[in-house]
Amino acid sequence: MTASDSARTLRGRLILIALFVLFFGSALGAGLLRFSGWMPAGLKNHGELLDPPVDLRVRPPQLADGQAYAWNPESRTWRILAVVPAAECGAECPEVLERLDKVWRLFGHNADQVEILWLGATPEGADAMPALRALREDAGLRAALPRSVDPAGVPLYVVDPHGFVILRYAPHADPVGLRADVAKLLKLR
Image 1: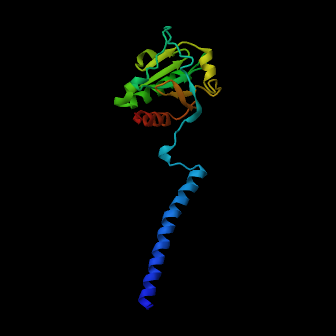
Image 2 (image 1 turned 60 degrees about the vertical axis):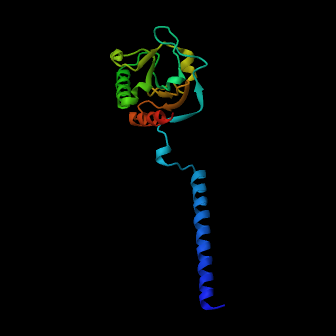
Image 3 (image 1 turned 90 degrees about the horizontal axis):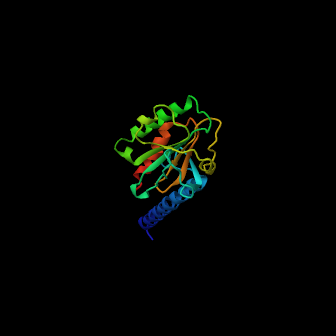
C-alpha cells in the first residue's frame, strides 16, 4: 500500500467519523434538549396550560338575558372568559374591560373570530364593546374553572371553539401575552 492510498483511506475514515458525529451528535443534542424541558420561545404560551382542559359543554353558560350560550364550533370562534368576583369588582373591572377591548381590537380582521365572555356584573361602558357577551351568574361555572376565585384580582381564560377551557391567565397578566397566544390559536384552522 502506498502513502497516497493510506492517506486516502485515512481521509475517508475521518469523513465517515465526521458524518457519524454530525448525524448522531445532533440527534443526541436534540434528545437532551427535549428531555430537559427546553422549548423554543415561539412554541411557549404565556398563559397556564390547563391539563386536562375544562369541558364547559357539560354545563353550558347562559347569557345575561337567560338564553343559552351556543358554542357553535363550526364558526371557529375563540373566547376569552373574564371571571370577575361575585361581589363588587371595584375599580379593577373597568380596567380589565378596557384591556380586553384593546386586545380584541388588535386582532384586526380576525376580531370577528374572538368573543369576550364576562361572568359577573358588567361595569359601565360594557355596552360599547361589540364582542362582549355578558353571562348570567353561575356558581357551578365558577366552581368548574380552576382558581376562578383569586384574591389578586380577575383571572382570564381562553376557551376553544368547542367549549374547552385550555389556558388560564393570572390576574394582572400582561395582555400582550394573551393576545399573542390567541393570535397563534386563530391561525389553527
